[in-house]
Image (cartoon, rainbow, N blue to C red; front, top):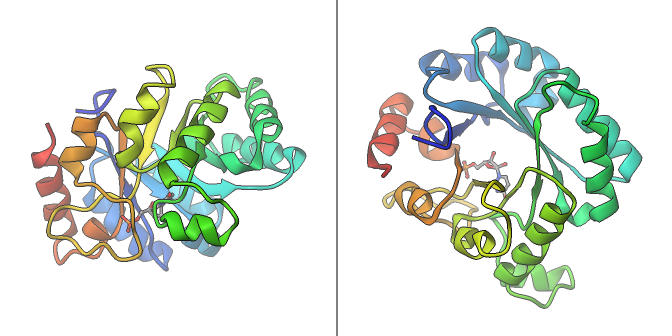
Length: 233
Ligand SMILES: O=c1ccn([C@@H]2O[C@H](COP(=O)(O)O)[C@@H](O)[C@H]2O)c(=O)[nH]1
């Protein structure tokens, strides 16, 4: 079980049509897991896909990773709150003022979405950071951005499960750690670089495991989800 009564798994509905996403959603039980709508599905379907998922009682993580000036990102997270999503995110590299403005922008909501920030994408490794002028290990940059996010008063971060132990040492216990880059031992890593197995991620202290292709591209997605959940401590 996760930090509430649901499993910690958030299934990434990275599909190229509303129909395909809903076929998958209809196989899932909203009392067992949450779902994530990302850039591909939201760009194709817009808010309608959220309505469909909410009708089916899912809590939805709207993963649009807003990265813009404070005014723009604040309006964007408010728009997400108006759509009733459970979780929304920005990029921590947008900076402290941007994150604080987003948090303040959500204060007027009775039940605001959880607001979290992406640290370093799990597809990135040291060379990728070096390419963009950051001569630092991912771990160091993730820790810096997690602390900044916590100081800005957000609810948590997106990071690799590899960084969970280190973040726990510098951020409050209540700080949510949302970890993509989850790969069962036999699964293809694809473009992910900083990965962990579901079991290791939960043991390390991840609150939520974001899992896409190992479930959605499986021959039998539901069986794959059930097998993953069965391995969790
Ligand atoms: O650092 C990040 C932030 C977000 N993601 C998203 O999570 C899923 C992972 O999908 P897989 O198929 O399991 O790799 C995907 O929607 C990404 O956009 C991430 O992977 N890393």
